[in-house]
Length: 208
Image (tube, rainbow, N blue to C red):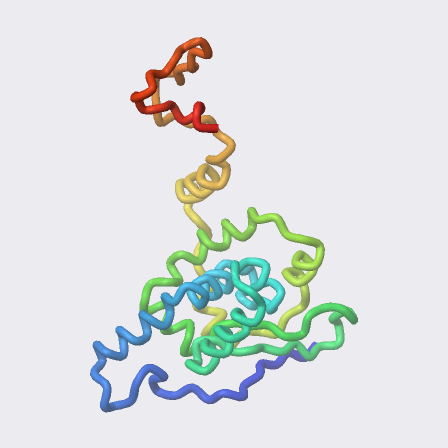
């Protein structure tokens, strides 16, 4: 089996400014770049993926933006050396299996680590593991992939969630199925025979 990365872009010392830019300004630019809404969601999709390599279809499924917008921001992330396209060239993939994947570069994983993004990898992974996936997306998630660079793979070798954190995540995921405990008193049923004065505030159920 042969795996290879694209390797077409050479990282620069800093894609957010040269030697004439103050370090604080570089940090400000990097933070602003990473927190742009679409790019932020793309990064979360990669961090939460079990292989940390996503196909375009997977990103489109997870990120609430159209395909052309996602492509544009993937290219922006690549231009800034945060992410790159990785290509699987092995012989074991099926005819309809994806071959191209997006993942973090060595520079990108270091940048995200500097800004504290990697600490959320276990939680993002737990969230993704509990999502519903179509047959196509499930096939993409389980497709054969190229190897990440060794330093990128090591950065994702994080410990499993602690039991308390797992419980908190499980409760958050199933919270919408539990009855609300915000109010102790039972709800008051409206009186169908009650009349409302003409100049009084009308209850919301009378407006429809």
